[in-house]
Length: 612
Image 1 (tube, helix red, strand yellow):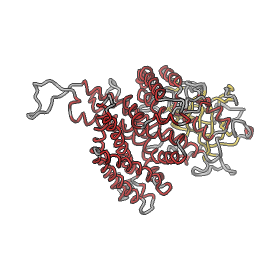
Image 2 (cartoon, helix red, strand yellow):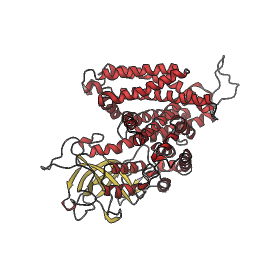
Image 3 (cartoon, helix red, strand yellow):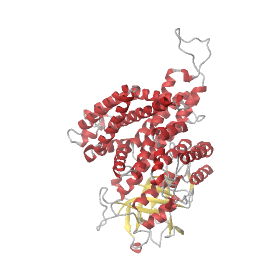
Image 4 (tube, rainbow, N blue to C red):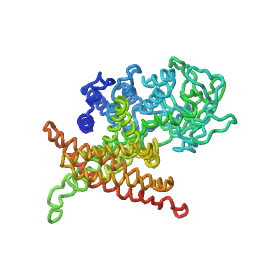
């Protein structure tokens, strides 16, 4: 994976240009490489050997309401904190390294590949702190964000409830004003009552405190919860209460563990059910968990999207890394496993020795598909991370363009690696044959770990609704025009270069079909008709995006090959060949998806419940 990451960062994304920016001027290409070297080594030496242990020794709820974790979880959490990556992209003033986001993402790819459930949930902690830096008060930033970034505390996001998974407008957790804390320096104080579900790292002892960010509704004057999202506010609810100097007061907040969710995979971190305000730990003699309002009341969901969007990019990165882990494992296996004989003019000759399975055409097909999915996903996520850096540090017009492009791509960055990474991991099992279905090889765990990525941070279908229902329509389609304009620019370069003009023509033809389907979906302006096939639309635009990126990658690979400076021509030729594969085997799939979108096909929507 390192060879691919180096190519994507240095040749394709040309990250050395970032060092010309004021924010990153203290760094060089060498310091970026040193960061990656260190993280790759720690992931290989510390995380990878412990990955199977935490899969087999999953978290347990103890009688005292605590969570038991294997020693491996503590070892990897500390190792990750020691890297400084929790605050890698933060300002020096916040104890950060001011590294580009794209370097942080590349570094985290090594850890996700070595052990996706290890590291103490650093992604959530970083996202929690970033949200507070953007929307919290000065003291909230200093106490809660800074301390999380230091590694002393960890963070969560508490959104879902048993009756309201992704439908956050239906949450019922209440936040009642605490008259004794109206002027608390940490923020207007409320008492939180309710339960939250699917909280990763909601209870543990990996850090001295846990900072929960909780969505809750403040009742109106009649004590009623405002329906929909307008009534949702965001609160900081620490497990242990703290003072304004970020010191623990010794008082436990009224937050308790109600149970653990026992997962198919991703077992390295506990997934919890938390109860708030049941009176188990009364604060000042009152029930209700103490929570501090973040920003303005009623803006909770808007604030939380700051964290969710970061988390969605991180999910895409984890999915790409798991796909890569399976790809490498099955490639290694195919190179040593002997089975079958060559198919010659007169069939298989039993007198010949067996051949390695990588010599069989269908095994090569499965490996090539995995390479396309895994490396394509990695490229997509690193490109998105590079857009984060552009939005942060480029000149205003370019920064605004990067932000719009990132908004457009985020549903794809989360969903495409999750969907096709799972397919890659399935193919990795298939390459191993029966052995792949056993615990003697790691590929079955990669598949189980991967399966979560299509669910969390917005289930797959939700991102289709977001893309077709909102993103492509915002600002009269400005995001879609910008994205397709970038694609057409790559196609023009490919025609000029000549060798890949066939794919350039296929790309522009596919762009036209997507634009036509988008218009057709909304031709009647009826949401039910337009969005009935939002998921096929997501698949089509995802594949179109990946075809664009593979063509762009192949152009860069051919340029490097032509320069004669590369010492790794086999790797570059492999990238070009993978581009050929994607255009000949994958891009044609979009026609079936777009057909039902364009026709506003109602087959699924009209299926009566009793017909099942």
